[in-house]
Structures are given as structure tokens and as C-alpha cells.
Amino acid sequence: MAGLLSWWSRVALVSLCSSALVSCFVAEPRSAKPLELDRECFPSLINITIDELTAGLESGKFTSVDLVNAYIERILEVNDTLNVVTELNPDALSIAEALDEERAAGAARGALHGIPILIKNNIATNDAMNNTAGSWSLVGSEVPEDSTLANKLREAGAIILGKANLSQWANYRSSNSSNGWSAYGGQVYAAYHEDQDPSGSSSGSGVAASLGLALAALGTETSGSILSPSNRNDVVGIKPTVGLTSRYLVIPISEHQDTVGPMARTVKDAAYVLQVLAGYDEHDNYTSAIPNDGVIPDYVAACDPDALNGARIGVPTNVIEYYTSGFTAMMTEVDAFYADLDVFRDAGAEIVLDANYTAWDQYTNSSNTTIVLQADFITNIAEYLAELTVNPNDITNLEELRAWTQAEPLEDYPDRNTAVWDGALEAGFGNTDPRFWEAYQANQFLGGEGGVLGALERNSLDAIILPTSFSPGNPAVVGAPGINVPLGFYPPDANVTMNSRGNLVATGPNVPFGISFLGRRFSEETLIGLAYAYEQLTFHRDDVQPYIEPTVELACACGH
Ligand SMILES: *[C@@H]1O[C@H](CO)[C@@H](O)[C@H](O)[C@H]1NC(C)=O
Ligand SMILES: *[C@@H]1O[C@H](CO)[C@@H](O)[C@H](O)[C@H]1NC(C)=O
Ligand SMILES: *[C@@H]1O[C@H](CO)[C@@H](O)[C@H](O)[C@H]1NC(C)=O
Ligand SMILES: *[C@@H]1O[C@H](CO)[C@@H](O)[C@H](O)[C@H]1NC(C)=O
Ligand SMILES: *[C@@H]1O[C@H](CO)[C@@H](O)[C@H](O)[C@H]1NC(C)=O
Ligand SMILES: *[C@@H]1O[C@H](CO)[C@@H](O)[C@H](O)[C@H]1NC(C)=O
Ligand SMILES: *[C@@H]1O[C@H](CO)[C@@H](O)[C@H](O)[C@H]1NC(C)=O
Ligand SMILES: *[C@@H]1O[C@H](CO)[C@@H](O)[C@H](O)[C@H]1NC(C)=O
Ligand SMILES: *[C@@H]1O[C@H](CO)[C@@H](O)[C@H](O)[C@H]1NC(C)=O
Ligand SMILES: CC(=O)N[C@H]1CO[C@H](CO)[C@@H](O)[C@@H]1O
Image (tube, rainbow, N blue to C red):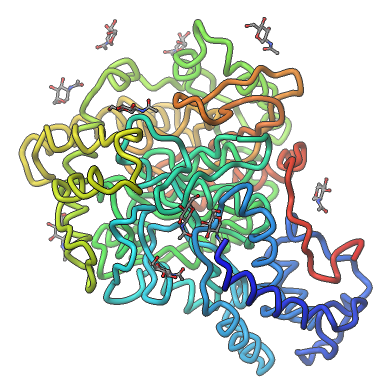
């Protein structure tokens, strides 16, 4: 770990701990409100919610400075083992101080005021932190301003605590790397089994949200990169519709599929964060597709415990059959999924079985999904590089990036190859080429009428549900949203399966998995309601505990 940073935060924490434990870190109340929560027991940071943190901040039980210090200590406690956070924001404490003063002056900005959040290391900030997608090629690069989403977080009063490690280039480089590995950040591990595959590519974001290394984290998804790590890290992840959240100054794969969303421990907390992220941005014209004149629904109010009552929810049986016929490895997840259908029915929902994706076979055979990403990446990575104000290695396009990466020993080539880029360069065209548009149109059918959108329409459904291990790919090609909610975990006698590189435990005892709620484009309000109601009835996140947990807590936590 970075020696200077860890020394600095330890000194800060020691000085805070000298105040009396009984009243948390602060001796005096910071707000005019009475300390009515004083005798209540605060949950651990691994379980705490935004509402609880805000109550504690408002009542003066602790400050945002206390929170930043506690979270940094927690990050450093587990980072050597799990390698979750690439770098801490050296300005986090001074930002927290300023936000504490604003709150004390009665000027709290909203639900995220003073709440620490980590962001994936492909979302740029115009501050001391690097934005690298995990590649040494971009260390020291600078952007003209904050990404729109980093700016929105700051405006809402959130504290950007640091950058979460990720699968390098959001898993768009190599065919034989591992989830959660980046040259710049090392290998992320998940917390539910030793050497657990964290999934990806928002790997560090998933582990951080699960262990309470921040209240929540931002991830990005092109095809599965929020839903899949949420699946394996026992957290809620919202993959928004492409166009709901700006991608300006986010290192891209594909303008047609990339999206940025929250990963948190509860649906409501993810909804709070999405509320701040969503909205029109003149720098990303996909956001002009937001319906209702760009007015964003109240996602927090959508958290209705009765939302399942009267809902029609479909199960694409043929998708599940595709992944399980002849294989037994995934049956634990499928059995848990089918067992919970009664939770939906008991809550008043109608389950429509066989809401099949009619072009599924064609979809699974199609190379059009690959072509779209290849062409988009060629175009979009060059666009991102052109936006840099400092470009330390003068890399301007994919060809140069590949040459640099193959020549740089830190990038671990050829042991981690560049096969994905090789394929794109071999195809050799960007996203204004007619061959791109042909492939793109094919995708609109494969994920549309022949896929998830068609299944929703034909069966008049509010949502489709699937085990998350099978859910992300088809909605990805049409930019449709999804939410992962924890569903269960592998039992103690489960066999260990390894990832394809053979260095990480993919499934095995105690490894979590989730259920996905999929819907029409811009149907987040509906999906949040359904996911929240299911979560309130099941609380499956609590069924499984990590094998490794940070121990630093706010002093007013239970038992402290
Ligand atoms: C986390 O651990 C990795 C690997 O040991 C290290 O490179 C990185 O600097 C650490 N991050 C922090 C914030 O200490
Ligand atoms: C950004 O990267 C440079 C080069 O490795 C490093 O000196 C600097 O500390 C990094 N910034 C942070 C905030 O870690
Ligand atoms: C909006 O997107 C289209 C399609 O990529 C692009 O051609 C156009 O230049 C964009 N407009 C702006 C203002 O960015
Ligand atoms: C849906 O798929 C399942 C599994 O492949 C199949 O048994 C069923 O007949 C299909 N139903 C419809 C309506 O297509
Ligand atoms: C998909 O590929 C499989 C195996 O190559 C083949 O048997 C099947 O007919 C193909 N399906 C379609 C719809 O092209
Ligand atoms: C890709 O889309 C084109 C155009 O619709 C179609 O002709 C072709 O069969 C598709 N390729 C695959 C492999 O699905
Ligand atoms: C990854 O693939 C490259 C060839 O593309 C090969 O040289 C390398 O040995 C492979 N690494 C592993 C761990 O299999
Ligand atoms: C583990 O694998 C063995 C051998 O393949 C199999 O017989 C056994 O049923 C598996 N156990 C579980 C719990 O799936
Ligand atoms: C977090 O909550 C779960 C479920 O209630 C509980 O089992 C666990 O002990 C809690 N963790 C801590 C550190 O309090
Ligand atoms: C920025 C940083 O500290 N990067 C380090 C991340 O971890 C790997 C190894 O796990 C180191 O090689 C990097 O220097």
C-alpha cells in the first residue's frame, strides 16, 4: 500500500479516536437537532444505509470527516489481501471538512451530502487521481474537466473517496486475462471465498460495496460489467438504460452499449445514487433519448414494498435451458431461482413461464454482437484519447495502444494477450462503416423483437427475471436496463470451479449469486419498485457472510 497515504490516514484516525467513545467521534452536536438517536445502536459500516448515515450526520453522532477516516482505514485493512482500491483521493478529508461545515450551517445539499463513494477507475476526475482503466499507458494523463458523473456526485455533496480497481480496459483487451486484473491495479479478489473471482469488470466496485469500504460505488457496464460483479459480491447493482447516465469522460468500449450505474448493498441506496447520476448531458447526446422531456422519476419513492402486487413477471425458460442442459454446475443458482418464484406469487405477482426469447439460438450464434463492440471501440477509444489535455505516451488510436501495451513489460504481455484488440484491428473498421450498421441492425432484432424486449411486449410484462449468471448479454445489445438483487449462495459442500485462466475460484462454497430484473428502455422506476419489494421480502444478502471483513467502525456502532 502507498506508504504516505496510509501514514496520513492513521494519524488522522488516532486523533479522532481520542474523543469519548460513548458519543461517537464528536464531543458536541453539529446540528440544532436534539441527539435523539444517542442511545440507539448504529449498524456496522458493512450493513449501514444512507438513511442511517444521514441520521447520524444530522444528529451530530459523527461527521463526514469521521466517515472518511473510518472508510480509509477499512480499505487499508483489507487492501493487501483483496486489492480493491487503486488509489485514494488525497483531497477526501478536506472535502469532508467543507461538507461538514455546510451541514453545520444548515445547508445540506441532499441525500448524498457527506457520503463517501468510490468510483471505478475508468471514470475521470480532474483532480489528483489518475484515470487509467487499469493501464499504465494512461497513468499521468489529464482530462479537461471532471466527467459529468463525477461532477454530479460532487454537486450532490458526495465525497469521491478513491478509485476502485477493475478488469483492465473494462475487460476489453485480452482473451486469457482474469476478472478484476489490471496492470496498474493488480488482481482484485472477492471476499466470500479465498482467491475468489470477483467477476467484472466493475470488480473493485462490487467488493467495496459489499464490504462497506464506502457507502456505494460506481461501476460501468457494456455487457455484464455491473450485473455480474454484483452477482458474485452479494450486492445490488443497477445497470441503467444506455443514455440515462452520461458517459462524458468515461473511458469507453462502446457508445451503443456503455452505461454507468450504482452498486450498493440495498436497492434503496442504489436508487439514491442513481437519482443523482441520471439526466441529460449536452456532452453525451444519448442522454437526449431520456423520455418525459428529460424529467427523471423519483427512484427513491419507487421503493414500494407492495410493488409486486399485480405485477406480471416473465421467465424466459429457453434461456435457462440453454445454460443448464447437459451442465449441472449452475443448478444451485437455478434451483434457488425457481424456489423463489413463490415469493413473487405470494406477493401478488403473476409469473409467466416460457416468456422465451424467440431468436435465442440465432443470438447465441451471432457474431454481430462482437462486430458492434469492435467497431465502436476503434472509434470511441480514439475519441477519448483525443479529449485528453495531457496524453503522456501520445497514444491516439487502438493500433498505437496495442503496440505500446505489447512493448511495456508492466502490461504482462504476452501472458495476458491482446486478442480482443487483435480481432478489432483485423476487422479494421469503426462505427461509421456500413458493416457496423448492418451488425447494429441485426442486434436490434436479436435483443429486441427476438430477445428481451420482444418477450416483454408479447407477454405484456412489467419485467423479466433470470438468474444473473444468465441475464446481461441480451439486454446489453439493445441498451436495456437491469438490476441485480442477492438471491443465494453456494452451500458448504459445493465443488470448486476455477476461472478459465485457472487462478481464481469462480464458484464454490459460500460464493453468492443473484437474480436480475430486466425491463424496457428507461423502465428503471418500475424495475426499482419490483426489486425493492423482492428484497424486502427476502433479504438474501444477509444469508451469507464474507470470510474476510474490515473491523474499523464508527465508535457508535453496535458493540463499540
Ligand atoms: C491496494 O493494494 C495494492 C496492491 O498491494 C496497492 O498497489 C495499492 O496502492 C493499494 N491501494 C491503497 C489505496 O492502498
Ligand atoms: C497518479 O499516478 C502517479 C504516477 O504513478 C502517482 O505518482 C500519483 O501518486 C498517482 N495519484 C494518486 C492520487 O495516487
Ligand atoms: C450525436 O451522436 C451522433 C451519432 O453518434 C453523432 O453523429 C453526432 O455528432 C452527435 N452529436 C453531438 C452534438 O455530439
Ligand atoms: C419456451 O422454452 C422452453 C424451453 O426451451 C420450451 O420447453 C417451451 O416450449 C417454450 N415455450 C414457448 C411458448 O415457446
Ligand atoms: C447455431 O449453431 C449451432 C451449432 O453450430 C447449430 O446447430 C444451429 O443450427 C445454429 N442455429 C442457428 C439458428 O443458426
Ligand atoms: C449478422 O447480421 C446480418 C444482417 O442482418 C445477417 O445477415 C447475418 O447473418 C448476421 N450474422 C450472424 C453471424 O448472425
Ligand atoms: C495467453 O495467450 C497467449 C497467446 O495469445 C499466450 O502466449 C500466453 O501463454 C497465454 N497465457 C496463458 C496464461 O495461457
Ligand atoms: C461434486 O463433483 C462430484 C464429481 O463430479 C459429483 O459427484 C458431486 O455430486 C458434486 N457435488 C456437488 C455438491 O455438486
Ligand atoms: C450485518 O448484518 C448481518 C445480517 O443481519 C449480520 O449477520 C452481520 O453480523 C452484520 N455484520 C456486522 C459486522 O454487524
Ligand atoms: C497505483 C498502484 O499502486 N499500483 C500498484 C497496484 O498493484 C500492483 C500489484 O498488485 C502494483 O504493481 C502497482 O504498482
